Image (tube, rainbow, N blue to C red):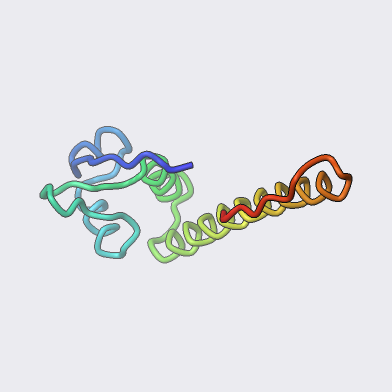
Length: 109
């Protein structure tokens, strides 16, 4: 499932997520957030990603380096969870096939 991507100005990030414009600029420079290529002083991001970053920074007080580590671990966890779902679906399919209850389909996940 594709995540929703929004374009939000640095100023709106302050209102919605409590991040200062300076923090947003720094996060963009560090590669933690992505600037909108066609809109000055704006981000093009998943709202959940911005909210997660703001929470980690504000509530847990994580340093900028720590934020990068935690967000990368989160991306890896999401990838592994998708792979587990794919493998479980494949196992169910093989069990069905071996039980003689249906065809074996090869999905390109």
